[in-house]
Length: 496
Image (cartoon, rainbow, N blue to C red):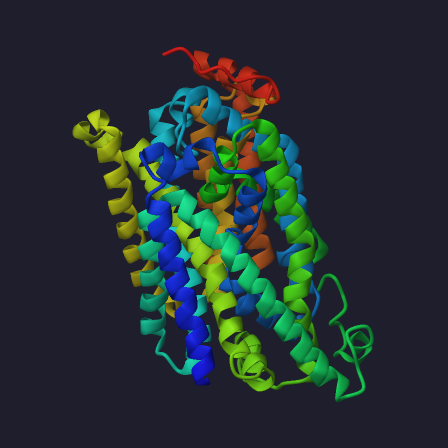
């Protein structure tokens, strides 16, 4: 890399820290730290939701799929996000905002104690927190792989550097810092994507091709929307999985809906994010689709880095690397904030009596400490990511499969048709999903598509079936779901 590339990277890190310092001054208490005090405009929350939804995995694992199999990488991994978030704009986003406005929640799991019971809340909180540690570890690992390709930084140091910078700004400014840095990261990523498009377009032109004609020159099957590895039913079930995950099951994304001033703005947040998921990944992935015509790589996950090194001039290479950084840092920072909210608001008060009487200042300080702990644990796992099956294995099979059993009770518990479903169905759904995942992956050793499908469907069926037989919802459940059914009306705070 040229000196100009290093200047761009260093400047980026400085800007991130400056934003963190500025955002720190906006945080007066725990509500500001976890939900931006409900004052975040919908367009900022929408960009933040989008940027928090995917990471450097796009440029590593998904780029590898694009190089090996073509457009299925977009159809399977990105298009479902647009559909899922669009569904959530009408089904879930306004309800999250109303929960904050009426019940003053600052954590996505906070309402579960009243909706089901405390044990159910704790089971989902602990299992979800553990899963998110592995999820973020995969993101650190992905960006470290790119750092190794670009500049030869050993993977361990790549993980430590990226996590360290993220930790500086997200612990200082909370959700405000996350959202503002994600806005800046979106702009930087846009410049990087345009640079990559122009450079790859020039390389295609040298072969007498362009972005309209190169499709016919691709290897056989690269323009097929589905493949034997990722069949059509996988796409459909992935949409179901992502509908739960991207509308609250992935806790950091629920926070974007909590942060807006009203239910209507939460809906606009989701619609903006849905539009970005539909269109923006195409811009990012076009160079990856053309890659088989331009480069040969030993490891397909290295393709994006190799293309950037081969085609981009000094300065722009650093910009692309910053764009890759931006996605990972955005997602990891928002995950860290969400986990600290869950642990501070939902877990600690139930395992440590002193935490029940925390002042607002003590809760804020605890949230920052827990953010640091979460990042450190994820870094330790990231350093050993390859021993866990690699980046794609963690993202697709672990997170994709296990997020359903954790999120289904939390998401369906907000809907009026399930108002009679209580903690028994929630816990059976969660446990059944986890057991079915263990059987599918480690006993029967089924392929990735079946492994992801099985626990989600099992959890969904169990939640509905057990809930129909055993209606043990607490009295507050009917009140909560009835209140959320009218998510466009005024939301007066609930009486204590």
